[in-house]
Amino acid sequence: MRKQETKRTVVIIAEDDPDDRLLIKDAIIEAGKQSIDVYFVQDGAEMLDFLYHRGKYEDQSKAPIPELVLLDLNMPKKGGMEVLQEIKSDPRLRTIPVVVLTTSRAPEHIARSYELGGNGFITKPNTYSELVEVMRNLKRYWFNTVELP
Image 1: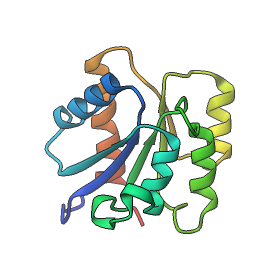
Image 2 (image 1 turned 180 degrees about the vertical axis):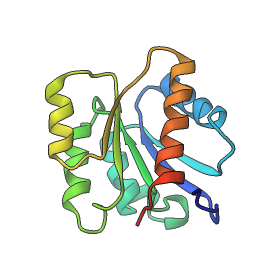
Image 3 (image 1 turned 30 degrees about the vertical axis):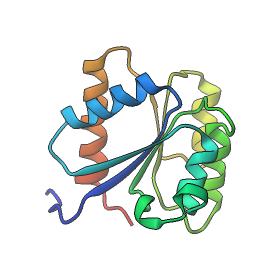
Image 4 (image 1 turned 60 degrees about the vertical axis):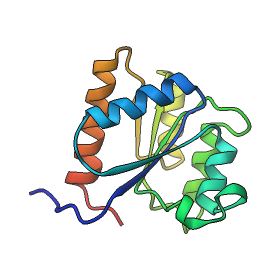
């Protein structure tokens, strides 16, 4: 049974590579018609500023609480594991699903992300068509199948 769409869904993506940001945004659009507002941040520190409404994100209308976080592990300023640990240790943020989306396939990265409370681990695909399929599956699972808080 599909949930009825009543509002726009907010997704924040931590990705420091501008080319990857563009590809991910295009893949999300191509993956389906669901109303998704995508916000990008360039590093882990900016991700936390967004979530805590600090600095340029103080205005909450410019930084709504997301229904899903996609988190790259290899970022400047503050790495993905540090960000994941902070999100999942904060009672105000820990219910937000965080899916790691990274180039790593290292078993220790996979294990550590789940130990820290990550909700999924996806290795970035090699082709654009595979990326579209990943985004389609993420949308289907997180916004049409599971119930979010």
